[in-house]
Length: 335
Ligand code: NAD
Ligand code: UFG
Image (cartoon, rainbow, N blue to C red; front, top):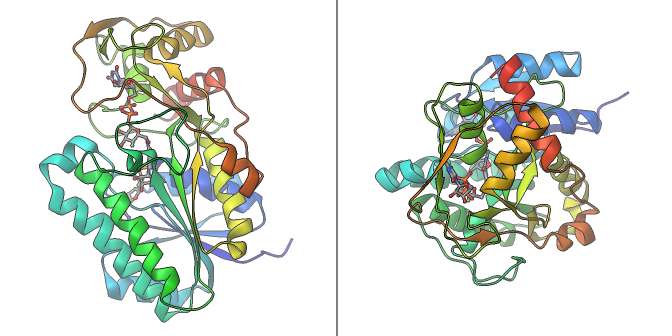
């Protein structure tokens, strides 16, 4: 089958980008990965190729490097860019706010300038529900007030605003900012998934390491939140569902100026629900202890995903059982 066109995936070797590459290819486009491998490994690109049955083109480059970005965009004729490259560790962003501004915000500026030079006018951007700050009401729809509660969140708000200016600065430009809730899980093949460096900050990779015996127990951050079982509630979304959302956005980009759309399931799960689902589905033990609340956390956050349904014809299909099953299978095969 002839390709429908080339899609450049910045950060395409990462957890989410690798899954997006697979879904983009399945929909008939040709993915090209661009990554500097600061938080990912080159072997991921090979595994994406293995999954697709043919190698995927990969450009090793930093989005902040104007020359490299010109060379990259000049060497392909990109229909659109899916812009996933970015640093995402909240704690690190508090310690190194300048690094986050430089990598995420300035990096996006350089990327957009290179796109301008080569006439690439479509982008799907990896935003985050962190742009809503502390939830004021639930479920969170796209009109919820915005605020940044850490430097990482500030970069997502800054980039969304930069993209507002970019779509207005020239004719026929189209952007969809996808505000992800909590992506977890892995591809059903167990060839690609999430493998953060060092001790994980996020719940699911931490649970995986405890289940494997690499960490002694999970610290549950707070048992006294105003939630049904006292532990924090989030909207976990399977990474394959999330990846499909990017394809849906890509297909409808030409009808958009700059739209912001939540990608979540609309269903909240507590920390203990995740732990218990993990134990039940995978037949393993996840020892845990209730600890003090983590600074900056909210009791509960979950999406109103109805705009994604209306605008993209997209709904999450996979539930918590598939998320914990696939996260575990990946950890045991490739993690
Ligand atoms: P990840 O760290 O696995 O992937 C990010 C990729 O971007 C990595 O491969 C990294 O090497 C690359 N990268 C970073 N800076 C780069 C640069 N300057 N030049 C080129 N490549 C660079 O993270 P992920 O979970 O796949 O996240 C992808 C995007 O989604 C990020 O923008 C992140 O902020 C956003 N996001 C993630 C989550 C989440 O919980 N995983 C939630 C909301 C939004
Ligand atoms: N949690 C624990 N123990 C842990 C890790 C997490 O109890 O070791 C709890 C948290 O307190 C929270 C829930 O598990 O209640 C989820 O925590 P994560 O760190 O996995 O996810 P967050 O919702 O806190 O935040 C993450 C990113 C944010 C991003 C958000 C939505 O860190 O930057 O997902 O994408 F905005």
